[in-house]
Image (cartoon, rainbow, N blue to C red):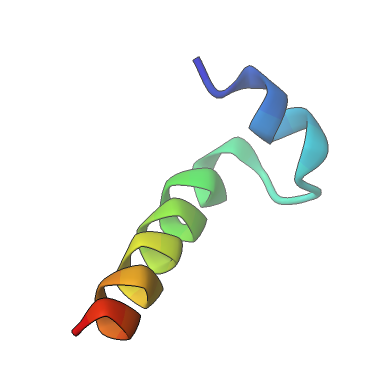
Length: 32
């Protein structure tokens, strides 16, 4: 589903989940 994200990001596929989690966390903090 996020194959494009893996190709666009220089990070490894395993780090993709961590990056996504940090992205969501940043949005939650900004909203809060």
